Image 1 (cartoon, one colour):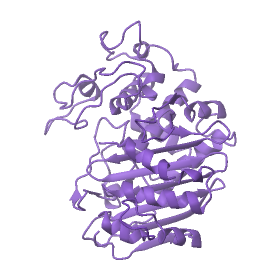
Image 2: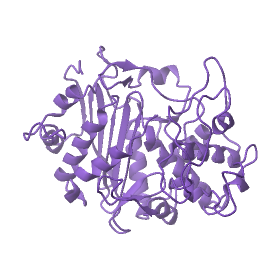
Image 3: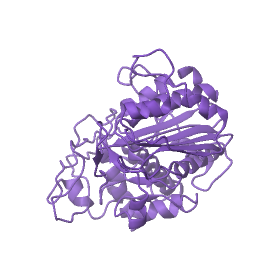
Image 4: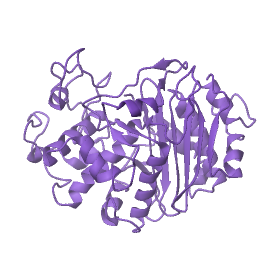
Length: 401
């Protein structure tokens, strides 16, 4: 897992080999065709419009799925390319992609579910809720206790271990091993390496939230996601973490490196609250649409309007110098821009060695999009697509594009 926050920023600053020319279209109007042939070349090597398929080939992205939401309805879907280089298995509506750090949105929703039901509070010392393992005193002081709010907003000071999370070969470990950084876990232990209160993007925080949710519920994280999110929204093609079933593997979009070579996926069997969602673009669009409906008070299948506003809100203004010059805010498990009436929420992520996902939503108008790929360089194609969508569909913040 190697999430790149710069991808998110670029999206909103602007806001293959062997593809065989395959596309699957679902309710696709001329506007999508217009976007396909008029993408902006982000490299600056050409001022002329570029073609989507050509960009996928240039960046070695074998497959891509696109869903557009308009007026709170899934209006358009289109799927391009193949699940694995060198094959002719097409990307379709049933193809599973890795959502990478967009998973954090679901983790945050699960946390807010338990906040709304009164099981936890955002501003209390996190150790109150832990039984099997607690944060060491050296990490959790009375002067600056670690709270759920701080973890959700990446301000707990937690580290971000290099190399992600893994176990020694032929061993079985658990979340406590990962949190402690003890054998058979091969990652660094959870530590505080930044001053609490300062923003420091951390996957460890969301793995810790996975542990918290399992502690207070007594259920596996994957089961919580299924019961609280997937089933109510009829996200029938979504799951968390490993193992993937044979049926899932048969329709999964395989990961591809920067040079377009097939790589084994980077999903983890124990720690996945930060990036372990496997889903389809259309399932992800159901989630995005529900959040927009809930924000507007039109649905309560996940959260009430009040708690969705807490989720999608400007919790912390991020330093523009760190964010590529863009004024953007940290919400819970996502980024935001704008005020309560015209807010935009967004998230993007990349799972190494080669899977990307980007989402954007405008609750005020019920507009948004999901773009998922199976290539490490897919983030660049996503940027070009989202920039085009903002302009053609006249999204509220289209001036950003």
